[in-house]
Image (cartoon, rainbow, N blue to C red; front, side, top):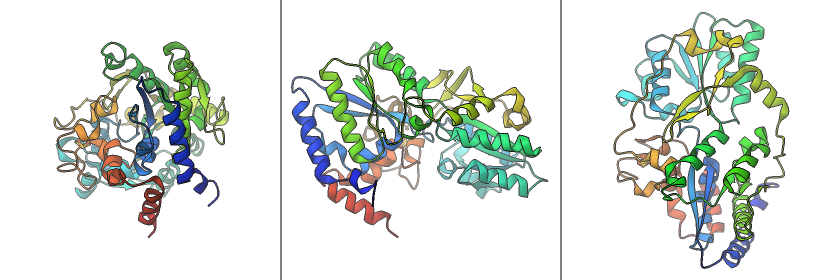
Length: 389
Ligand code: SF4
């Protein structure tokens, strides 16, 4: 298959691994954060860690949209369905994230809530058109990748004068989260999370471009390499990061040139800024309140803002005490540090958000951990077999 198989070539992966091992200085350690859940998934699925020398370590970041969604936001969506009688539409993974009172959206559906899984914001809009007598709320989550379709749905609803459609907006922003991590005590003062550089997001960067990362490289002296989601993309990005560290450089480099440009998708950016503005603060699971890290709907589109329409107020809710998602999302702990990983908490019965989505660190470790001792080619074959019906 063109443009897929060539990025999963086991021999090439081993060659890049050998290059990384040859160029990584034996007297030093390298710690790189892969911000995105898509990279976490690729690293686990294709056994990338097995090809790295022991002194090159990867740290999971908070870039899984489902994982960073705080319980209080899911509670709001559940209340809209159970107490306000709204049809709540959202993406599949969001349905299973544990919320308060042992509920999740899917359990709330079992209790009679009209909660529907959709593949896009446009699907939610279609449901609103088909049910003019009902309130339809799109529970919108995700990073900059899923924000433009939500903006488009709101603008279309405004143009059509759709009176029963609104959006519970939980869209978050990548650059603010990276800044927050770099400013955290674990990175800045305690040194418990040593970060020598970042693998920058793939799909997010298609929208926002590579330019927004210049700040980290300059201000914090941290190299960033934007990479695609295939295993060779990730391997190549790690090699580029090792080279930057060795040469004392801190630049933004783009491995994913087949899709990412410095300026990004200007049309999508214009649409997003027409509909959304920055929120002064937003709670992230694991990171707490992060200033200017999320979007809210502009006054001009207030009628489509579910928070205003239903007069919702947000109440923070603590995570399950046994769950280490917060520390995992900050890069402080690994999934296997959690005492209930793989026993009480599994993808079938997730206790925390990191076990829900395939991009979550715990789900990726649980699903692909068994490939740890298998070479990348065998892992690819097994994964392909698994995906074939
Ligand atoms: S294994 Fe489950 S409970 Fe533990 S940190 Fe991961 S998601 Fe949370």
